[in-house]
Image (cartoon, rainbow, N blue to C red; front, side):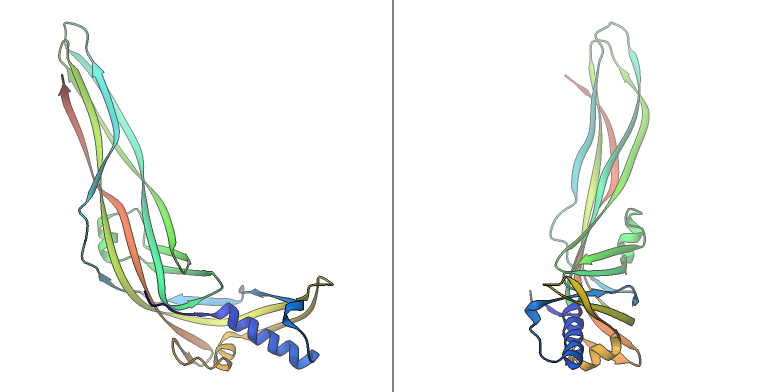
Length: 245
């Protein structure tokens, strides 16, 4: 899979080091460390345009609860059952085009309408932290109550089965980035800050002369984002009561 991603952390570090050299003259980068603070930077993602991929696998079902009731008497028995079990809904997202902040991203994307209409498990947003593969898990609770009749000298089983669906999407969106970043340069030997620089992200990206992937609109950088998302979640429960031999 071809990936076109710009590391803006590396871009900011290059800009900060250039600022340091302008004010301090010659220096060796290996003698220093650069840390970037993103607190003053704001990102806003447009609503993604999702394209549903052709399903390659059938729905998967799993038994999440099973209990048996044995009647050793000559009269019928009644047993009440109250089942509550939890499954995990999983959203996995990979960014194939856009930007990174080192290995992190910190991006929120709206969930596809097909998923929202099928389950409440994910809510309306999913969070993408790692560009290579970001996984978010949400708990889903399933419950069932009832009464089972067990004939004399018989055994009856109660099972709860949950059916899961898996939906795959590709997506495109745009992310608006605005604000400032702060870079702190420290000398390894003295372990102290020697310079702090602050700059507007639009000026930094403009100075990097990017050929593609982002456009600058005034003080805002607009990134084109593409990626892949997979959503796996429970869609149906089935409680079965059956007599066993």
